[in-house]
Figure 1 (cartoon, helix red, strand yellow):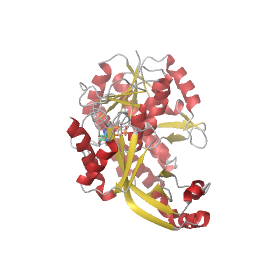
Figure 2 (cartoon, helix red, strand yellow):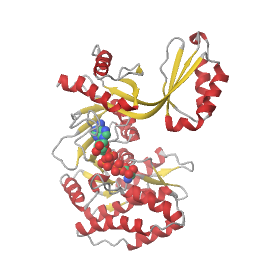
Figure 3 (tube, protein in one colour):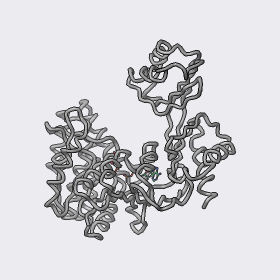
Figure 4 (cartoon, helix red, strand yellow):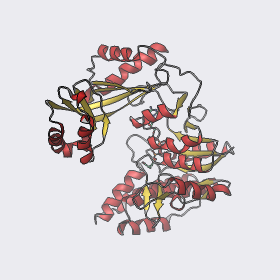
Length: 439
Ligand SMILES: Nc1ncnc2c1ncn2[C@@H]1O[C@H](COP(=O)(O)OP(=O)(O)O)[C@@H](O)[C@H]1O
Ligand SMILES: N[C@@H](CC(=O)OP(=O)(O)O)C(=O)O
């Protein structure tokens, strides 16, 4: 039995947290490959080491004073090393980091040092071999992750290593330049390692007892999802359920390796099991709710639009030309609406509008900003009648105005558009309707 265990930043934020992680790893001999994140927040007001590293690098590379921030970072590691009574000296590592910051080694290099240093500490603490992710996780010259090469090299490297620590979040291009995944990317590293060693399980240890039906920052003490499929999870993760990086699913999914989300602070809890498919009936009609704010809709009307071959393509080509990706595109007989990320769209707004006018000569074009999208996801929805009706009724009851509704043809999800200001209220209303009333 081989398990890969990834510990998130909150699980490794202090010596106290490190000890909990150590007990978990030592408690099961099959937990052989450990992927640590950088130290995260010790409390709500604290800072993540990754954020401090970005700040420090900006200052150093920009010729501003940076020593105080570097010292703050160093103190975080010293606190952990002292608290664990380790005989580990990071003088050399920190002088290299400082030198490279001044040489402008890059933001990715800077950010990656959080995981790198935590990996060194973790390996020393556990007595495991340290394997620098830069030697086994590869990106091409354009910064795209190299799946096949990484899988081969990593698999070969770990084949004869009994127990190892591989820092999360980064790898390297062939010229040695460090490249990170996007924020939260240690989850991806864990998944890549699990695939390469053909793990029986990928355990992802965090600060909540599993994947919750809704964001705990919006719903107080939400229910834990016992079992969820990769497809459901992908929908929820993409729509902002941040407990697992949305790209962490792909490597393990192909191999059918289950992911178990667990709580470092409550290791006795079973957590959430993420699987390819399951016969287990979900506990509720819906599996989860997630959402994101900050969208903008462009509503285009033209009589006989449906009869005009290529209408949709011409509209979307305008967005493509300006590099704006679209999120959703519900349509009616003579209308189509395109949802885009407001932050991505704002810069090109007027050019896109002019482009649409030129491309399809609409009768009417209207935009609305400050919208939020909410995804209600569940494999059980297909077999249950009236789900959309219940969502509408819950929202109407809470006086939330529904701007858009879009049901995927897989019937796995229903997407609802509301005003940003109604976002939290809408999630609460849907949670109450399905979870509280079905409990
Ligand atoms: N549906 C959800 N289920 C669980 N946690 C969620 C959900 N949506 C948002 N979160 C948030 O995700 C956090 C865990 O993810 P993250 O902060 O990346 O952890 P880590 O540092 O362990 O990687 C939780 O503390 C919680 O606030
Ligand atoms: N430390 C990186 C990568 C990461 O995955 O962190 P965490 O596991 O704490 O979400 C970040 O803050 O983005």
